[in-house]
Image (cartoon, rainbow, N blue to C red; front, side):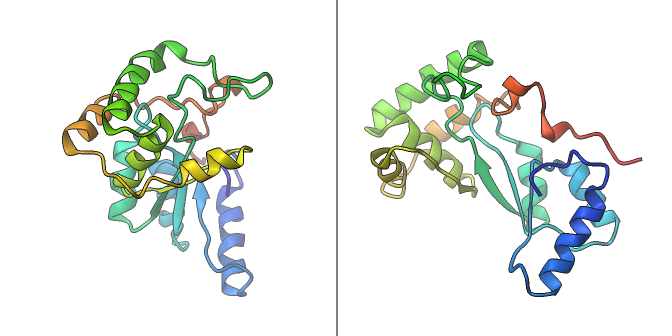
Length: 191
């Protein structure tokens, strides 16, 4: 389920559970669910999500949610891992490149400095950061050379000192949805 924005989300989740029981889905999960919306599922005695796909990068590290998912054996999957970059969504119609630019400025300096030191691209650094936090990391690009380059993040490791510098950039600030004015992680509780 892409986001917990519907008041029918428990009914929708129950339908996913039934699809799995019928053998029509091997795995079921959610996206953009926070601790409270995951607890709604658990409190309703429904099967827990196997995975939760959330925005995850140094500016939006989702520390409490990550801990909760690990405690409850829910696989964390990262999207928009490259959002802190100055080149992220800058083309007309992509929405997001200019959003929260002031928040991203300090992060871009630190990311560039560490990437240069490790002799890797900033994108590879951010993808590796997510992997070292235990996230499955989604990548995407329309350019084949970027796809190949972004998949090369298993051949290096970010040292602990640099991981800590990147971790300190956390402002728990989502960027991916900011241009739409919606933050699916702030879904209202069910009545």
